[in-house]
Length: 148
Image (cartoon, rainbow, N blue to C red; front, side, top):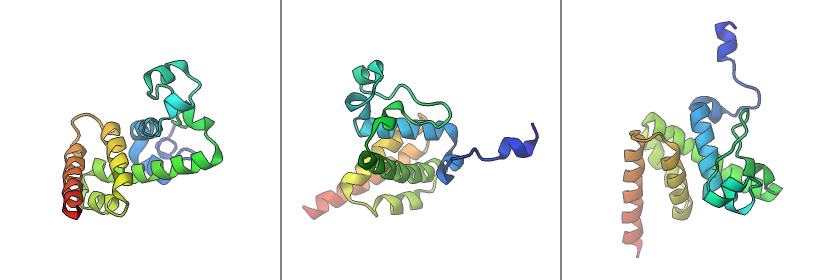
């Protein structure tokens, strides 16, 4: 295999999947499925239902098994949340906390709190992105208190 073949993007991969790699893609897909309650609600894998965690994904696409059992409308909502979580993951993983701040405050608080949790659990343990997400969470809490 030549070096150009090794670097060639896989067919069907989105831009964010190429940028964050296999580990990030798999973790994001699993954590998004868990945030939406898919393992407990629709997954055909018994262990996933029991633990309410996404334990199985297709190797080539990194898709959680339960995400393939969604209706078209549910799939659209899942993909929208996943795409946004991927942008936040990319900003947190790269350390661009200014971009992270802008991304998370363009959406309503309920939406970005879910994304923060998805990304926190998708990032590797001890990653510096956790600090940025914690800071965003504190800022959001202060804004919420200031509006009451």
